[in-house]
Image 1 (cartoon, chains in turn blue, cyan):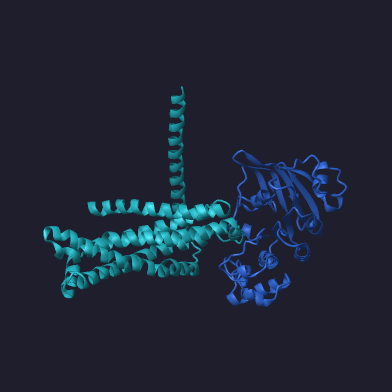
Image 2: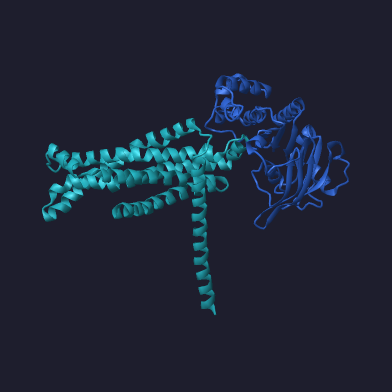
Length: 248
Length: 264
């Protein structure tokens, strides 16, 4: 379970998070939506400690994220980055097996490669891709490799940062389906941030909408269309007119 | 009134610059201390260290060698020409050797490596920052300071004295070639004069300087790349700042270290 309790974060005069309260139950897939610059990425990175909140508390399975062994804490997580964030200097299989080749549960090179190829197969990539470098792959394939890397060590919690950004609608659909299948199959807790409403409907159990640094609405995805919240309605129906001011 | 406003703005801008400089020095010092603290604690990434040693050391050999060769040759001509004014042409071999080993070998190698390596490290780490690869390392339970910064700084600190030593030898060779082919020195006498005037301290002080310059080169590349701003412009600025700050710090450190060796 992940809990954000009154989390605040400012960058200079820009108050990005103004007291975020959010709970994600174990095994639940939470999708955070909201306009650009509303603090979705900052909230996600705060959980991982990539951004230090100014105040508030973040608990993962009841434990404060700022305390305890950091390696053990991070070992619970897998993350798919927006641009893939694959390491250019390493081959595809070395990217996927990065965590398996280091640290406490370190595997031998051949075992790690076998696991990497199995994870690549799980995300629909052939073993031939394993020895290629990220720069040789298309955007969709890079996303799949990123997904394989995120699930390689079978984490309990997986974060997806804009998983379909930059992909065509068909590839977006494929990635959404893969994410849903993998999250259900692994029984993992998932936290996704996205603008893409097709992703929301494909991936989410619950939805939270961030607006002006706070959670504006949260509830099951099935209740999203009938929420009656004007902010959420404007966002999910992509209306230019409404309480959320669009910069023109 | 207008003069006062101008004075106020002028002094304010000086104050802001000084404060900014002090803050930057503090940040770089903290980054250096953090690097050294990670250098002393496991895990150690030996494969990364080996790769960097090859990239920073071995691949810098041509640029360092060529720089030293031409500098040694030019130095021999200059000293001959200057020495001729008071009939001291015979000092060419010893002065070339001392100047190369104590000063020009380490400083020129340092500056050339600063141009080649600082920029490449800053561009690589800057791109990794912008494309979230550094964040990805953290989420994969790998400390970016240990994985990216420590191997580069350690490799440069070890490689630079070796490069400078090779530069010294090639520079002296450059002087020897010009001396024997152009200035009619006897080859055996030239070599004999080179050896007999060189002392261990000359070589040692040059190598210590080179190690310090290696540390500076990699540290500046890593610091500016690691803290790169967003986008192509951010990476470009990081690369420029890395080369400029590494070059200036090398020259400043050269004076300080020379002063220390001179005093002792």
